[in-house]
Length: 310
Length: 283
Image (cartoon, rainbow over all chains, first blue to last red; front, side, top):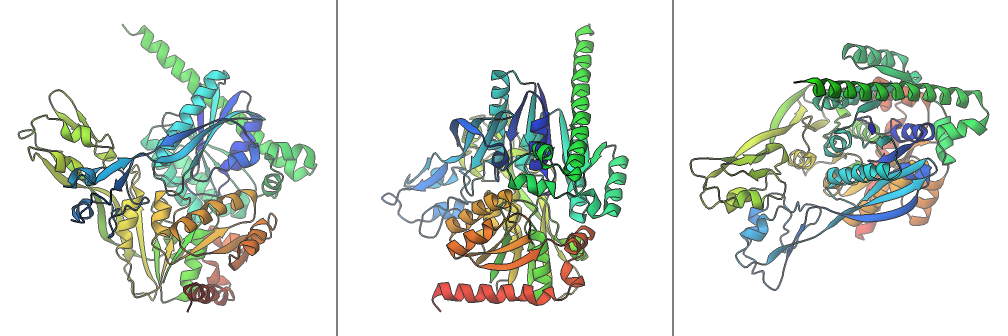
């Protein structure tokens, strides 16, 4: 099984639009929407839910007002500022470390389970999909991403799918790391803006930190061709293959309004612009498929080598 | 007055709004709290100087005193300590710095040492605009402590604009939760609207009043507008989907610098916010 993650550092570069497009091009893939914070892939793919499961995050401290004598030791000990002056817990600050439970001389504090989100398994018109909904202000989003990926792997086994397509979250923090670790290829999406380039650099720093083969692609390259050249030069210098330049096109918004992938939309929209855009996406996809195949062959090769080692 | 600029979805224009808003108001503080991708200064181009290194206190175990009781490892909720038969192994990158291990160690063999996870910087030059930002080191996971450290530098006596990270998870809530007002930047598309509702839900949970800046106005449909009208949420500003604005953004130029007529419009946001918040306080 192969895994491809699509990330961008900066938000709004078109990760979900592109993932959705890939989903209508790939045969036999499972989708994993790992942007658990703002899960948008379902808006296009209209999943039919098979199963929902709660994700338990770190526990939450709870003070029993009957036992609490207001000594203030917990407030003093809590490093996260989660104990309020009136000896209640601010759930958005509590990290479930349990220091208060052992610090309290009256044994008034206990930890209670908290549901940090839900993992959902679904079926879409392009195949199975795993996605999630993170509870507002919850922190376990790296954990939830892992659960989505595990669910996607289960679905891939169940429906004998060969590929997992991961729609990644923005940023470079915990959820992104959870979304890319152990994948075979990462596609970093950029846009020709100062922030696009800046965030591309940070995203590539991250993928090289994890030593994952990385390819790049520029979206809306024609809104600033000079910046696009800068990105091209950067990719060349850092040895990141730049696979495609996607133009700025109304088709992306139009397709989204119709709740279709750009590939689906291009078929019936009849405009040459839409068809052209869809073709660039098709070419990009076949490039990616080739590379995924290459990485799998390399892996097989190194496995064969190992088998031959005395 | 602390105003957070937030959005559920990434790339809707938080930084654009935050930077232009701050430049229009002039005598304010701007705090870039998107510590995973701090982009404000790409548009401001200020010279920055380090203010402090943000650290997390991680345990260091003195093997001479350790009795291998394993209390620390079984206490740690983050799996940052593992008990082997002959020693305790620590994984500093998983540690949240709660200090629990030291507290439960009966042999007092645990000391806490600061481990750098990020940096706070500020403008070195004398500007009417005070700018601070936090940066989370690549490969680090704990954005919230960096945000909290950054917020300690806010001068409460002056207005401050906080550029928030996207989403509605812990780091975004840490920013929205400390604000008196939340400006939600969105666009009127299915993705934009969906993520806007998530952000709105977060502001309601935090009991922070919110208004909307409609970015790329003209694309999509009127779903955000219709919703705001029905719910009585003020639309503070509309930024049209203009190539000139996109162009200036791509170059890293705050658009009010080239399009000065926008200065007044951004200033009016503050007026509207003041009116709305006074009303809600019953003044």
